Length: 238
Ligand SMILES: [Fe+2]
Ligand SMILES: [Fe+2]
Image (cartoon, rainbow, N blue to C red; front, side):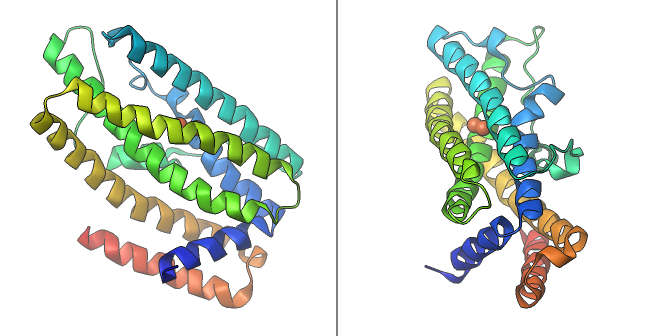
C-alpha cells in the first residue's frame, strides 16, 4: 500500500474512533446525497429519450434518497444530529464550482443540445460517484471499529448502490454520444473532479482539524494538517 492510501486508511480510522467526528463525516456524505433536492438541474428524466435510461435514473434518485435515510439512522446511532451543511461543504457543489460546462437541460434547447447536456450531467454524476465510492471503501474498512455496528451496515449498503451508479452512468455517456464527443465530455469532468477532490478534501480536513481539535490524536493531527496544506499546494498546479 502506498503512503497516500495508508494515510487515508489511518485518517478514516481516526475519524471512526471518535463518535462526534464520525458523525460529522457521515453528515458530509449525507449532504451530498441530499444535494439533488437543492438544485433544479439534476436527474433531467423528462428529457431522456430512452425509456430504460429514464427508468434507471428514476431508480438512481430513489436510491440516493434511501441513502439519506441510512446515513441519518447511522448518525442517530452514534448519538449525534443530522447537520444541514452549506454548499462549500458539499462535494457536488464543489465539483460544480470547478466545472466550466453547464449540464442543465431545458425545454427550449434543440435535441442535440439536450442530449449533450444530459451526457454532461451523467459524466458529472459518474466522476462524483466514483470519488464517493473510493472514499466509502476506505470508510467501510474503518467502520469495523465504530462505536455502533450500524454505520458499517449502512455504508456497505450505500457502497453497493454507488458501484452500480458508477457503472451505468459511464455506459450511458458512451451510448449517448459519438466517441470523440464523449471523450471531450469526459475530459471536462475528469479534470473538474481532480481539482474538486483536492479542494474539498483539504478544506474539510482543515475544518474538522480546527473545529474538533480535541478529537484527534495529537501527533497525527499535525501530520494531517500538513497533508491538507500539501493538497492546497497541489490544487494550484492541478
Ligand atoms: Fe448515494
Ligand atoms: Fe450514487
